[in-house]
Length: 552
Image 1 (cartoon, rainbow, N blue to C red):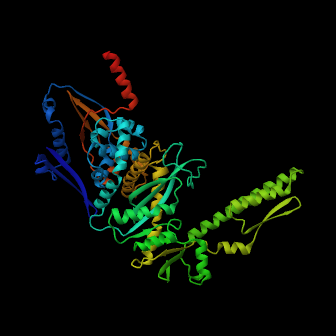
Image 2: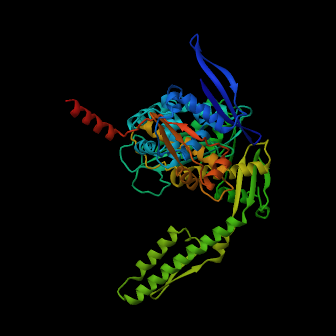
Image 3: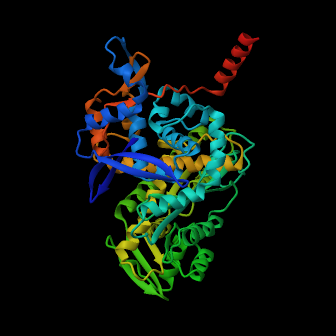
C-alpha cells in the first residue's frame, strides 16, 4: 500500500493528486487498485499517512510513551526535493525509468545542477544530501555510477524518444534549432579527443564536438558527441535523421547559422523534402547587391522581404548592432594608434633601432585586428603614423548591422522566420550554461567514448531542469545558482524515537519559500529516513581491510 502523490499543470494552474493505492501482481502483471482519493486532504494529513505507511512495521515504537526522543541536524533536502519534483513533472523520471540504474542516472542529473559533475563528487554529495531518501537510491559508490553511465549511453536514444513523446503528446513542433560547440580536454587519452577548431581558444588541447538539437523555444531534444576534428557541416545529416526517423516527423524546418547550413546541406534537405532557415554571409549579401536583387535603401529597422528563384530573403538593419560594430572598430583603431605611439617613442630613445622593423610590427597588428583594409601606415623619418582611408572605411561601414535570412519555407510569415532564426540565441545560452555558468561539462573525467557521450547526455538532462528553473524564476532577482544555493541550505531535522528515525523539514527562509512557490512545488513536513550510507570506493576499501584484520 502506498500514496500516489503527483502534481500536474493544466492551463497554467498546478494541481495535486494524492491517491491511496494498493499494488499487486496478477498473471505476471502489476495491477493497482485505488482505495481512496486523498486530494482534498490537508498536506499534513497526507504526510502523516505517508509516514505511517513508511513505518508501519515500527508503529509500536512510535506509539510507545517510554521511548526517548533525540533530535539532530539531518541531511540537506531543499535542492534535492525541488529538482526531483521538477524531474518528475518534466518527464525525466519516467524516461529514465524507476529501476536502480534509472535512479542513479537521475541522481547524477540532479547533482550536476547542484554543482557536482564528476562521479566521485556526486557520491560525496549524496553523503550530505538526502539522495537515498528522496530519489530512492540504495547504497552506491562511484564505480556504480560509472557502470550506470555505460547503461545510459546504450539507452540514450530510447530515453530521448520517451521524453519527446511525453512532451509533445498532442502536437509535434515543426521547427527545430541546431548548433554545435566544442569542449576542450585536459587529458590526452579520451577516445573521442582530437585536435580541431577550438572555440574555447585553448591551443594545444584536444577537444570533443557537441551537437545540440532543440525545439523552436530552445528546449533540448537530443544531443550527440563527435570526435574533436569533426566539421560542423558533417554533424548535420545525423540530426536530420534523428528528427525524421526516430521522432517520426514529416514536416520539418531546420534552423541553423550560416556556418551550419550551406549548399550541400540545403540540397540534402531538399531531397528529404524538408525546409531550412539560415543566414547568408557578407560576401553573399554583396553579391545580391551587385545583381540588384536587393538594394541598400531597403534595409530598415523593420523586417522586410523579397523573393527570388523560390527563395525568400528576409532582411533587416539592426541599429544597436551597427553601433556596437562602430564602437568595436573605433576601439581597434585606438589600439593600433597606441601601439604606433609606443613604437615612435621607442625609436626616439633608441637611435640604433630599425624603423622598418617597427613599421612591420604595426602593420602585422593591423592585420590581426582586421582593419588593414581601411588604415594606412606610413613612415616619415623615424616617425610612424596611422591614417584612415575614408573611402575604404565607408565601404566597410556600408553593411554594419545588416543581415539577411534565407529560407525556402513558404508557410510561415517573415516575422516568424526572423524570430525563429534569432531563437538560435537560446541554443547559445544552452551551451554557455552547459559549459561555464552552471553545469560545467568540463572537466570530462572519463576516457571511454561511451562514458563521454553519457556524461554530455547527463549535462543535457540537467540543462532541461535549468531551463525550467530559468522559466519559473525569471521574474525574481536571483540567478539559478543563487536559488540552488539557497535551497541547499535547507536541512532536515532528524528525530529519533527508539529505533525509528524520521526527518522533519523546517519551514524555509522567505526566499526559499518564494522559490518553492514560483516552481509550484509543495515541500513536505517530513520524509522517511532509509538510514542508507553512501561511501566512496576509498572508504569501502578501508572498511573491508579493517573487517579483514578484525576477523583474522
